[in-house]
Image (cartoon, rainbow, N blue to C red; front, side, top):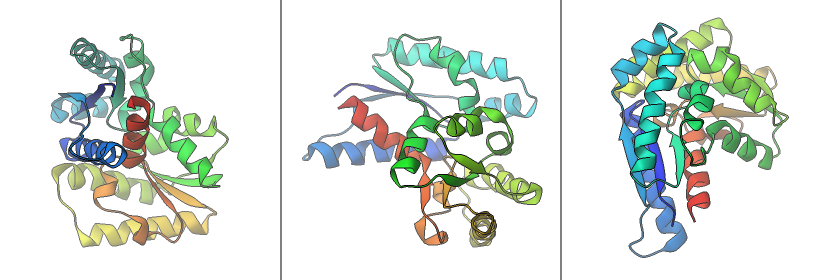
Length: 228
């Protein structure tokens, strides 16, 4: 098995899910006591969040590029950025190392298309829902991407940063997310991408009338497949 390099800590709540899923999926594939070979560099999310909030994306790319080089030096054969939002600097990170970067949006788009879905709703941070770096990557695979209205985007973003990134899971927020999903479905979404790695702590298949696509699980499964 190749060694999977992880750029994590954004937040550590979702990075813990990555680690669990990588090991569970490896055990499913290989059986017995097998677990994933991986190297993790976990950053301080408070520093990253301030960089995001002030729009200093080049600095964000520098930070993750340095982390990526350390992961490569530690023996990683392939690289994951364990967050949707920070794929805004994916090209900068990929250019800093000689190992392949497995892009989360590409893996997600492949899963959506394999399910026969072409028109998909996207939930994530405001950066992911409103900026082009993620939506256009999905559109490049032939997907039509819908996002919530302004109120819905604000709610989804606020719950991510003020609750889920702190390990807080509230039933009220689950109900609110269900309403946002229902609005996306009413607008024509055939499926919904859970395009923030923390959202899977709150929302699952039972919360949506259409298929959901959990990006953390999808990314982890693609990484295990590539590593094996």
